[in-house]
Image (cartoon, rainbow, N blue to C red; front, side, top):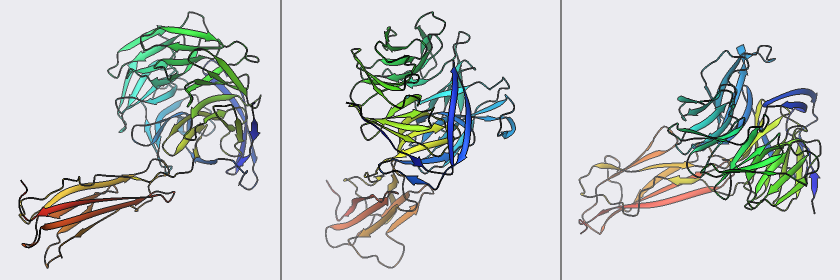
Length: 466
Protein backbone atom coordinates (compact mmCIF):
# COMPACT_ATOMS: atom_id res chain seq x y z
CA UNK A 1 0.00 0.00 0.00
CA UNK A 2 1.27 3.46 -0.92
CA UNK A 3 0.29 6.51 1.07
CA UNK A 4 0.83 10.01 -0.29
CA UNK A 5 0.22 13.05 1.88
CA UNK A 6 0.53 16.72 0.99
CA UNK A 7 1.62 19.44 3.42
CA UNK A 8 2.08 23.14 2.77
CA UNK A 9 5.03 25.20 3.98
CA UNK A 10 5.13 28.99 3.94
CA UNK A 11 8.58 29.93 5.24
CA UNK A 12 8.98 33.36 3.69
CA UNK A 13 7.48 36.11 1.57
CA UNK A 14 7.56 34.67 -1.96
CA UNK A 15 6.05 31.68 -3.70
CA UNK A 16 7.74 30.55 -6.88
CA UNK A 17 6.05 28.22 -9.37
CA UNK A 18 8.46 26.73 -11.89
CA UNK A 19 7.86 25.21 -15.30
CA UNK A 20 10.70 23.85 -17.38
CA UNK A 21 11.86 22.39 -20.64
CA UNK A 22 14.78 19.98 -20.40
CA UNK A 23 17.42 19.10 -22.95
CA UNK A 24 20.83 17.49 -22.49
CA UNK A 25 22.46 19.28 -19.52
CA UNK A 26 20.20 22.32 -20.08
CA UNK A 27 17.10 23.47 -18.24
CA UNK A 28 15.10 26.62 -18.89
CA UNK A 29 12.70 27.89 -16.31
CA UNK A 30 9.89 30.43 -16.25
CA UNK A 31 9.28 31.70 -12.74
CA UNK A 32 6.04 33.37 -11.71
CA UNK A 33 6.39 35.11 -8.36
CA UNK A 34 3.37 35.98 -6.23
CA UNK A 35 3.12 37.18 -2.67
CA UNK A 36 2.68 34.55 -0.04
CA UNK A 37 0.43 34.91 2.98
CA UNK A 38 1.73 35.06 6.54
CA UNK A 39 4.20 32.25 7.17
CA UNK A 40 2.79 29.09 8.68
CA UNK A 41 3.72 25.46 8.98
CA UNK A 42 1.14 22.76 8.40
CA UNK A 43 0.93 20.22 11.18
CA UNK A 44 3.52 17.52 10.58
CA UNK A 45 5.57 19.58 8.12
CA UNK A 46 9.36 19.57 8.54
CA UNK A 47 11.35 22.54 9.76
CA UNK A 48 12.92 24.04 6.63
CA UNK A 49 15.27 27.03 6.52
CA UNK A 50 16.39 28.95 3.43
CA UNK A 51 19.66 30.85 3.03
CA UNK A 52 20.11 33.40 0.25
CA UNK A 53 23.23 32.82 -1.89
CA UNK A 54 25.16 35.32 -4.06
CA UNK A 55 24.40 33.42 -7.28
CA UNK A 56 22.66 30.45 -8.87
CA UNK A 57 23.51 27.25 -7.03
CA UNK A 58 23.41 23.78 -8.56
CA UNK A 59 24.65 21.00 -6.30
CA UNK A 60 25.55 20.64 -2.65
CA UNK A 61 27.68 18.09 -0.78
CA UNK A 62 29.08 17.61 2.74
CA UNK A 63 32.70 18.68 3.04
CA UNK A 64 35.57 17.28 5.11
CA UNK A 65 35.40 20.21 7.55
CA UNK A 66 31.90 19.95 9.06
CA UNK A 67 30.35 22.36 6.55
CA UNK A 68 28.38 21.97 3.32
CA UNK A 69 29.91 22.96 -0.04
CA UNK A 70 28.13 23.94 -3.26
CA UNK A 71 28.69 24.91 -6.90
CA UNK A 72 27.53 28.35 -8.02
CA UNK A 73 27.57 30.78 -10.96
CA UNK A 74 26.94 34.53 -11.11
CA UNK A 75 26.19 36.76 -14.09
CA UNK A 76 28.74 39.23 -15.36
CA UNK A 77 28.84 42.44 -13.32
CA UNK A 78 26.37 40.91 -10.85
CA UNK A 79 23.58 41.46 -13.41
CA UNK A 80 20.41 40.14 -11.67
CA UNK A 81 18.65 39.59 -15.02
CA UNK A 82 21.53 37.63 -16.60
CA UNK A 83 21.27 39.67 -19.81
CA UNK A 84 24.83 38.64 -20.72
CA UNK A 85 26.06 35.07 -21.30
CA UNK A 86 29.26 35.82 -19.39
CA UNK A 87 29.45 33.90 -16.13
CA UNK A 88 31.71 33.90 -13.09
CA UNK A 89 31.89 30.57 -11.32
CA UNK A 90 32.47 29.68 -7.70
CA UNK A 91 32.66 26.95 -5.10
CA UNK A 92 30.79 27.98 -1.95
CA UNK A 93 30.78 26.87 1.68
CA UNK A 94 27.94 27.16 4.20
CA UNK A 95 28.16 26.32 7.90
CA UNK A 96 25.39 24.92 10.09
CA UNK A 97 24.92 28.48 11.36
CA UNK A 98 24.24 29.69 7.80
CA UNK A 99 27.51 31.58 7.27
CA UNK A 100 28.52 31.55 3.58
CA UNK A 101 32.01 31.84 2.09
CA UNK A 102 32.73 31.70 -1.64
CA UNK A 103 35.92 30.76 -3.54
CA UNK A 104 36.22 32.10 -7.11
CA UNK A 105 37.25 29.73 -9.88
CA UNK A 106 39.48 31.03 -12.71
CA UNK A 107 37.41 33.21 -15.05
CA UNK A 108 36.76 32.09 -18.62
CA UNK A 109 34.86 34.35 -21.08
CA UNK A 110 33.35 31.42 -22.99
CA UNK A 111 29.53 31.72 -23.22
CA UNK A 112 27.82 30.52 -20.03
CA UNK A 113 31.20 29.78 -18.45
CA UNK A 114 32.80 26.41 -18.00
CA UNK A 115 29.71 24.93 -16.37
CA UNK A 116 30.85 24.07 -12.84
CA UNK A 117 28.29 21.53 -11.65
CA UNK A 118 28.92 18.29 -9.72
CA UNK A 119 30.70 18.27 -6.36
CA UNK A 120 31.87 15.73 -3.78
CA UNK A 121 34.32 15.43 -0.89
CA UNK A 122 37.35 13.37 -1.85
CA UNK A 123 39.29 10.91 0.30
CA UNK A 124 42.19 13.39 0.37
CA UNK A 125 40.35 16.08 2.36
CA UNK A 126 39.66 18.25 -0.71
CA UNK A 127 36.54 19.00 -2.78
CA UNK A 128 36.36 17.56 -6.30
CA UNK A 129 34.07 19.05 -8.95
CA UNK A 130 33.11 18.81 -12.62
CA UNK A 131 33.05 21.45 -15.35
CA UNK A 132 30.62 20.40 -18.06
CA UNK A 133 31.69 22.81 -20.82
CA UNK A 134 35.24 23.07 -19.53
CA UNK A 135 35.61 19.32 -20.07
CA UNK A 136 37.72 18.86 -16.93
CA UNK A 137 37.72 17.75 -13.31
CA UNK A 138 38.69 20.23 -10.61
CA UNK A 139 40.09 19.90 -7.11
CA UNK A 140 39.68 22.57 -4.44
CA UNK A 141 41.32 22.58 -1.03
CA UNK A 142 39.35 23.92 1.93
CA UNK A 143 41.59 27.00 1.79
CA UNK A 144 40.64 27.69 -1.84
CA UNK A 145 43.59 26.37 -3.90
CA UNK A 146 42.43 24.99 -7.27
CA UNK A 147 43.97 22.28 -9.48
CA UNK A 148 42.52 21.11 -12.81
CA UNK A 149 42.69 17.78 -14.64
CA UNK A 150 41.58 18.15 -18.31
CA UNK A 151 39.82 15.15 -19.84
CA UNK A 152 41.75 13.72 -22.79
CA UNK A 153 38.86 13.45 -25.27
CA UNK A 154 36.81 16.47 -26.37
CA UNK A 155 33.14 16.94 -25.48
CA UNK A 156 33.07 14.37 -22.67
CA UNK A 157 30.92 16.76 -20.57
CA UNK A 158 31.62 15.48 -17.04
CA UNK A 159 28.45 15.85 -15.03
CA UNK A 160 28.09 14.44 -11.49
CA UNK A 161 30.88 13.02 -9.32
CA UNK A 162 31.25 10.85 -6.21
CA UNK A 163 33.88 8.96 -4.22
CA UNK A 164 34.07 5.21 -4.77
CA UNK A 165 34.89 2.40 -2.36
CA UNK A 166 38.35 2.16 -3.97
CA UNK A 167 39.35 5.68 -2.87
CA UNK A 168 39.08 7.17 -6.37
CA UNK A 169 36.67 9.76 -7.76
CA UNK A 170 34.03 8.50 -10.20
CA UNK A 171 31.99 10.68 -12.53
CA UNK A 172 29.46 10.49 -15.36
CA UNK A 173 30.09 11.90 -18.82
CA UNK A 174 28.36 11.87 -22.20
CA UNK A 175 28.95 8.21 -23.11
CA UNK A 176 31.05 6.78 -20.31
CA UNK A 177 31.83 6.47 -16.64
CA UNK A 178 35.08 8.19 -15.68
CA UNK A 179 37.50 7.46 -12.86
CA UNK A 180 40.24 9.73 -11.54
CA UNK A 181 42.66 9.03 -8.72
CA UNK A 182 43.66 11.72 -6.24
CA UNK A 183 46.98 11.86 -8.12
CA UNK A 184 45.13 12.70 -11.35
CA UNK A 185 45.32 9.38 -13.22
CA UNK A 186 42.29 9.13 -15.53
CA UNK A 187 40.44 6.05 -16.83
CA UNK A 188 37.34 5.99 -19.01
CA UNK A 189 34.83 3.12 -19.22
CA UNK A 190 32.46 3.51 -22.21
CA UNK A 191 28.80 2.72 -21.57
CA UNK A 192 27.70 2.50 -25.21
CA UNK A 193 28.11 4.35 -28.48
CA UNK A 194 24.51 5.60 -28.78
CA UNK A 195 24.36 9.37 -29.18
CA UNK A 196 22.12 9.91 -26.17
CA UNK A 197 23.23 7.32 -23.63
CA UNK A 198 23.79 10.17 -21.15
CA UNK A 199 24.93 8.63 -17.86
CA UNK A 200 23.74 11.24 -15.38
CA UNK A 201 23.79 10.73 -11.59
CA UNK A 202 26.19 8.34 -9.86
CA UNK A 203 26.43 6.90 -6.35
CA UNK A 204 28.42 4.25 -4.49
CA UNK A 205 26.22 1.22 -3.90
CA UNK A 206 25.96 -1.12 -0.91
CA UNK A 207 27.82 -3.76 -2.95
CA UNK A 208 30.94 -1.62 -3.45
CA UNK A 209 30.13 -0.83 -7.09
CA UNK A 210 29.13 2.48 -8.67
CA UNK A 211 25.48 2.80 -9.76
CA UNK A 212 24.29 5.39 -12.24
CA UNK A 213 21.23 6.56 -14.18
CA UNK A 214 20.79 7.00 -17.94
CA UNK A 215 18.13 9.68 -18.18
CA UNK A 216 17.57 9.35 -21.95
CA UNK A 217 17.86 5.56 -22.25
CA UNK A 218 15.51 4.71 -19.32
CA UNK A 219 18.13 2.53 -17.67
CA UNK A 220 20.05 2.01 -14.46
CA UNK A 221 23.72 1.10 -14.80
CA UNK A 222 26.32 -0.53 -12.57
CA UNK A 223 30.11 -0.28 -12.85
CA UNK A 224 32.44 -2.31 -10.68
CA UNK A 225 35.61 -0.66 -9.39
CA UNK A 226 37.40 -2.76 -12.01
CA UNK A 227 35.36 -1.04 -14.73
CA UNK A 228 32.97 -3.89 -15.64
CA UNK A 229 29.71 -2.20 -16.63
CA UNK A 230 26.20 -3.58 -16.98
CA UNK A 231 22.93 -1.75 -17.61
CA UNK A 232 19.36 -2.68 -16.69
CA UNK A 233 16.26 -1.48 -18.53
CA UNK A 234 13.35 -0.18 -16.50
CA UNK A 235 10.45 -2.41 -17.57
CA UNK A 236 7.01 -2.03 -16.10
CA UNK A 237 7.38 1.65 -15.24
CA UNK A 238 4.24 3.66 -16.04
CA UNK A 239 5.28 5.79 -19.00
CA UNK A 240 8.78 7.08 -19.46
CA UNK A 241 10.72 7.24 -16.21
CA UNK A 242 13.54 9.62 -17.08
CA UNK A 243 15.74 8.35 -14.21
CA UNK A 244 17.73 11.27 -12.84
CA UNK A 245 19.03 11.16 -9.25
CA UNK A 246 20.13 7.92 -7.59
CA UNK A 247 21.36 7.05 -4.10
CA UNK A 248 21.87 4.07 -1.82
CA UNK A 249 19.01 3.76 0.65
CA UNK A 250 18.96 2.67 4.29
CA UNK A 251 17.51 -0.70 3.23
CA UNK A 252 20.46 -1.83 1.11
CA UNK A 253 18.79 -0.98 -2.21
CA UNK A 254 19.29 1.75 -4.81
CA UNK A 255 16.63 4.47 -4.98
CA UNK A 256 16.16 6.74 -7.98
CA UNK A 257 13.91 9.60 -9.09
CA UNK A 258 11.75 9.31 -12.23
CA UNK A 259 11.73 12.87 -13.53
CA UNK A 260 9.14 12.20 -16.26
CA UNK A 261 6.86 9.65 -14.60
CA UNK A 262 6.36 11.33 -11.23
CA UNK A 263 7.57 8.27 -9.34
CA UNK A 264 10.35 7.16 -7.00
CA UNK A 265 11.97 3.88 -8.01
CA UNK A 266 13.72 1.21 -5.98
CA UNK A 267 16.14 -1.36 -7.38
CA UNK A 268 17.67 -4.13 -5.31
CA UNK A 269 21.26 -5.09 -6.13
CA UNK A 270 19.88 -8.24 -7.83
CA UNK A 271 17.83 -6.08 -10.22
CA UNK A 272 14.42 -6.46 -8.54
CA UNK A 273 12.46 -3.31 -9.34
CA UNK A 274 9.57 -1.49 -7.66
CA UNK A 275 8.27 2.08 -7.80
CA UNK A 276 6.02 4.44 -5.86
CA UNK A 277 3.90 7.29 -7.25
CA UNK A 278 4.31 10.89 -6.16
CA UNK A 279 2.59 13.99 -7.54
CA UNK A 280 2.40 13.15 -11.26
CA UNK A 281 3.55 16.61 -12.35
CA UNK A 282 6.17 17.11 -9.63
CA UNK A 283 9.30 16.21 -11.58
CA UNK A 284 11.23 14.40 -8.82
CA UNK A 285 14.89 15.09 -9.45
CA UNK A 286 17.53 14.10 -6.89
CA UNK A 287 17.33 12.29 -3.57
CA UNK A 288 19.35 11.60 -0.43
CA UNK A 289 18.93 9.44 2.68
CA UNK A 290 18.11 11.43 5.81
CA UNK A 291 18.98 10.83 9.46
CA UNK A 292 15.35 9.81 10.09
CA UNK A 293 15.66 6.55 8.11
CA UNK A 294 13.74 7.91 5.10
CA UNK A 295 14.83 9.31 1.74
CA UNK A 296 14.27 12.98 0.87
CA UNK A 297 13.94 14.24 -2.70
CA UNK A 298 13.47 17.47 -4.64
CA UNK A 299 10.48 18.13 -6.93
CA UNK A 300 11.57 20.77 -9.39
CA UNK A 301 8.27 21.22 -11.24
CA UNK A 302 6.12 21.92 -8.19
CA UNK A 303 8.64 23.69 -5.93
CA UNK A 304 8.37 20.94 -3.33
CA UNK A 305 10.39 18.64 -1.10
CA UNK A 306 9.37 14.97 -0.85
CA UNK A 307 10.01 12.22 1.67
CA UNK A 308 9.62 8.47 1.17
CA UNK A 309 10.09 5.72 3.73
CA UNK A 310 11.67 2.37 2.76
CA UNK A 311 8.18 0.82 2.76
CA UNK A 312 6.86 3.40 0.30
CA UNK A 313 4.99 5.98 2.40
CA UNK A 314 5.30 9.34 0.62
CA UNK A 315 4.91 12.85 2.01
CA UNK A 316 5.24 15.97 -0.13
CA UNK A 317 5.85 19.48 1.17
CA UNK A 318 5.24 22.41 -1.24
CA UNK A 319 7.67 25.24 -0.50
CA UNK A 320 5.66 28.45 -0.37
CA UNK A 321 8.95 30.33 -0.34
CA UNK A 322 12.29 30.29 -2.00
CA UNK A 323 13.39 30.64 -5.61
CA UNK A 324 11.10 27.94 -6.93
CA UNK A 325 13.51 25.33 -8.21
CA UNK A 326 14.69 22.75 -5.65
CA UNK A 327 17.39 20.70 -7.33
CA UNK A 328 20.46 19.02 -5.77
CA UNK A 329 20.13 17.46 -2.32
CA UNK A 330 22.50 15.82 0.17
CA UNK A 331 22.56 14.82 3.83
CA UNK A 332 25.19 16.51 5.96
CA UNK A 333 25.88 18.33 9.21
CA UNK A 334 22.70 19.77 10.67
CA UNK A 335 20.20 17.91 8.46
CA UNK A 336 19.43 17.44 4.76
CA UNK A 337 20.47 20.30 2.48
CA UNK A 338 19.18 21.21 -0.99
CA UNK A 339 19.72 23.89 -3.62
CA UNK A 340 16.90 26.16 -4.75
CA UNK A 341 18.21 28.30 -7.61
CA UNK A 342 19.45 31.30 -5.58
CA UNK A 343 19.10 29.75 -2.15
CA UNK A 344 20.26 26.80 -0.12
CA UNK A 345 17.65 25.06 1.99
CA UNK A 346 18.09 22.93 5.06
CA UNK A 347 15.63 20.38 6.42
CA UNK A 348 16.25 20.33 10.15
CA UNK A 349 15.70 17.36 12.43
CA UNK A 350 15.34 17.20 16.18
CA UNK A 351 18.83 17.46 17.65
CA UNK A 352 19.31 15.22 20.68
CA UNK A 353 23.07 14.78 20.31
CA UNK A 354 25.26 16.86 22.66
CA UNK A 355 28.41 18.66 21.46
CA UNK A 356 31.71 16.82 21.34
CA UNK A 357 34.48 18.05 23.63
CA UNK A 358 38.05 17.19 22.66
CA UNK A 359 41.58 17.90 23.84
CA UNK A 360 41.15 17.09 27.52
CA UNK A 361 44.14 15.56 29.40
CA UNK A 362 44.39 11.78 29.41
CA UNK A 363 44.12 9.51 32.41
CA UNK A 364 47.92 9.43 32.76
CA UNK A 365 48.33 13.20 33.21
CA UNK A 366 51.16 13.72 35.71
CA UNK A 367 53.48 16.69 36.26
CA UNK A 368 56.98 15.70 37.34
CA UNK A 369 59.41 16.93 38.46
CA UNK A 370 57.79 19.58 40.70
CA UNK A 371 59.94 22.42 39.39
CA UNK A 372 57.31 25.15 39.97
CA UNK A 373 56.93 25.76 36.22
CA UNK A 374 53.67 26.10 34.26
CA UNK A 375 53.14 23.35 31.71
CA UNK A 376 50.49 23.07 29.02
CA UNK A 377 48.42 19.94 29.64
CA UNK A 378 45.43 20.49 27.33
CA UNK A 379 44.05 22.31 24.32
CA UNK A 380 40.28 22.00 24.79
CA UNK A 381 37.74 22.60 22.02
CA UNK A 382 34.12 21.69 21.28
CA UNK A 383 32.13 21.12 18.10
CA UNK A 384 28.58 20.26 17.09
CA UNK A 385 27.61 19.29 13.54
CA UNK A 386 23.85 18.99 14.12
CA UNK A 387 22.49 22.33 15.29
CA UNK A 388 25.77 24.12 15.89
CA UNK A 389 27.59 25.18 19.03
CA UNK A 390 26.05 28.02 21.03
CA UNK A 391 28.37 31.02 20.86
CA UNK A 392 30.50 31.36 23.98
CA UNK A 393 29.07 28.21 25.58
CA UNK A 394 32.40 26.38 25.98
CA UNK A 395 33.87 26.99 29.43
CA UNK A 396 36.92 25.42 31.07
CA UNK A 397 37.61 25.62 34.80
CA UNK A 398 40.39 24.23 37.00
CA UNK A 399 40.32 23.47 40.73
CA UNK A 400 43.12 22.17 42.95
CA UNK A 401 43.13 19.88 45.98
CA UNK A 402 45.57 22.31 47.61
CA UNK A 403 44.85 25.98 48.30
CA UNK A 404 46.25 28.67 46.06
CA UNK A 405 49.07 30.49 47.88
CA UNK A 406 49.87 34.19 47.36
CA UNK A 407 51.75 34.77 44.13
CA UNK A 408 51.35 33.62 40.49
CA UNK A 409 48.35 31.40 39.76
CA UNK A 410 48.84 27.63 39.78
CA UNK A 411 46.44 27.22 36.85
CA UNK A 412 46.06 29.38 33.75
CA UNK A 413 43.25 28.97 31.17
CA UNK A 414 43.81 31.03 27.99
CA UNK A 415 41.52 31.46 24.97
CA UNK A 416 43.06 30.25 21.70
CA UNK A 417 41.20 32.78 19.54
CA UNK A 418 39.13 30.09 17.79
CA UNK A 419 36.67 29.21 20.55
CA UNK A 420 38.92 26.79 22.44
CA UNK A 421 41.23 27.08 25.42
CA UNK A 422 44.81 26.24 26.41
CA UNK A 423 45.22 24.87 29.95
CA UNK A 424 48.48 25.31 31.86
CA UNK A 425 49.14 23.85 35.31
CA UNK A 426 51.99 24.49 37.72
CA UNK A 427 54.20 21.52 38.55
CA UNK A 428 54.14 22.14 42.29
CA UNK A 429 52.76 20.62 45.50
CA UNK A 430 53.06 21.09 49.17
CA UNK A 431 55.36 18.83 51.18
CA UNK A 432 52.72 16.96 53.12
CA UNK A 433 50.11 14.46 51.87
CA UNK A 434 50.18 12.35 48.75
CA UNK A 435 50.50 15.24 46.32
CA UNK A 436 48.33 17.74 44.45
CA UNK A 437 45.37 16.88 42.22
CA UNK A 438 44.09 19.34 39.61
CA UNK A 439 40.56 18.81 38.27
CA UNK A 440 39.75 20.25 34.83
CA UNK A 441 36.07 20.59 33.87
CA UNK A 442 34.83 21.59 30.39
CA UNK A 443 31.19 22.23 29.46
CA UNK A 444 29.57 23.13 26.13
CA UNK A 445 26.04 23.65 24.84
CA UNK A 446 24.61 23.45 21.33
CA UNK A 447 21.86 25.60 19.82
CA UNK A 448 19.27 22.89 20.53
CA UNK A 449 20.05 23.06 24.26
CA UNK A 450 22.00 19.81 24.53
CA UNK A 451 24.89 20.05 27.01
CA UNK A 452 28.17 18.14 27.18
CA UNK A 453 30.52 17.94 30.17
CA UNK A 454 34.01 16.43 30.39
CA UNK A 455 36.22 16.03 33.48
CA UNK A 456 39.90 15.11 33.73
CA UNK A 457 42.50 15.15 36.50
CA UNK A 458 46.22 15.83 36.55
CA UNK A 459 48.42 15.00 39.52
CA UNK A 460 51.63 16.36 40.96
CA UNK A 461 52.72 13.33 43.03
CA UNK A 462 54.48 13.68 46.36
CA UNK A 463 57.25 11.42 45.14
CA UNK A 464 58.37 10.32 41.68
CA UNK A 465 56.41 7.34 40.45
CA UNK A 466 58.35 4.16 39.64
